Image (cartoon, rainbow, N blue to C red; front, side, top):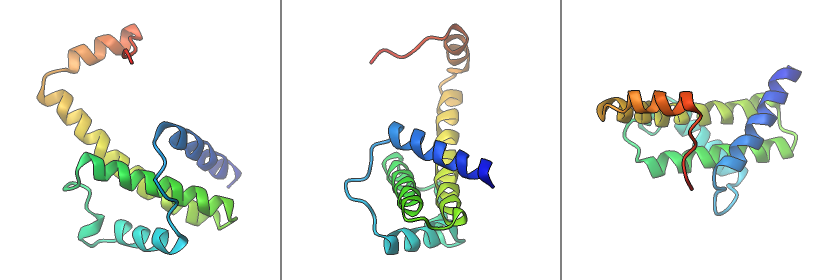
Length: 122
């Protein structure tokens, strides 16, 4: 369980740094309601129809909810449930990126740049 908790804290740290924080911290009630809707079997749990912006918003909220739950010493299980929803949403984003790479025949370029250690210019 300690390894799981350490992994969860690491993920929260990395994800929080990599993603923009929500404009406002969601309340525990909002977190619980969204978690229930997004992790259930209803239409809101489907990520295939969400826009990229909606995917990012959902991921940001779930990271913020997990972070808040961790700060308030909620159970590890609750933190992991938020992170599970984050990862399911992130998986949809990754699938779309892979589909884009495949659709535009960019696999070779992607592989070459990754092998060469090429970093994007910002």
